Amino acid sequence: MTEYADTDFYTITYCEYNEPIIPIELFGLYAKKASASINRYTFGNIGEEVPEAVKLCCCDLAEALYNIDSRVSGSGVTSEKVGDVTVNYESGELRRQNLPKTVRSIIYSWLADTGLLHRGGDLC
Image (cartoon, rainbow, N blue to C red; front, side, top):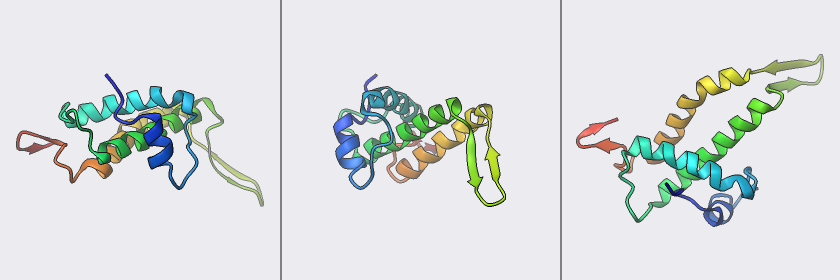
């Protein structure tokens, strides 16, 4: 399985106005994971010519997966307040449990209007 977006697309097109979040040497790994998820939702119907929406979705999803992995191994701080010190934590397990919702949300936000999420006549 190849990834739907490469490092050039990620750094030049997707991150045109923002700094890349994923270290370039790790992008291929996260793009493959993201592409596998996209494939499941699109039933492998992407084809040879990959639409830009799929490439953008791949980058967005790759960043989400990277962020989840980074936060699972990180401190788990979700918010912080300096005056009268308030810190909120989220467990790595909770982030893992929310992963399917996150994946679905990102894929639907990019691909809902493309027709790629249809299998025959039914919307998945």
